[in-house]
Image (cartoon, rainbow, N blue to C red; front, side, top):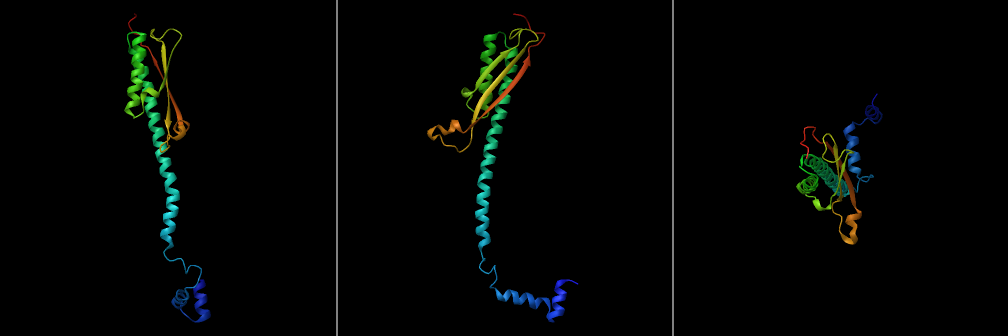
Length: 171
């Protein structure tokens, strides 16, 4: 038998009378809790929401940096293997990195670009060219006070490899 039926049979009073008496008492544990739910929601919401918003901002900055570095490295390797000579290839690759990073709002002059050629030479047929691009992505909302911005940055690196065409003209 349910507990409310047992109570009704024991006392001879219906359930709604019991609930009315409990409401009238009002001196229980929760009597002074009127209106505190909104305050608790605002406090707990702020404590949880502020770090969550910062996490989203930081992750989006890092993701943007990763996309920028990967795209810049890939494009630099492509440009390098299609250039007519090594001097033009190096200049074109560095320019491709700068343009690729500038598209994402990252200053291209801060990138470290390394170009590594295979054993057969940089532009020899079927040789490989590997371009490595490294940047440091600063975390958002970190002040540049006491050069904290450089300490609170994450290094990101991307490597792209392209093969020189076997139909490339010699010379």
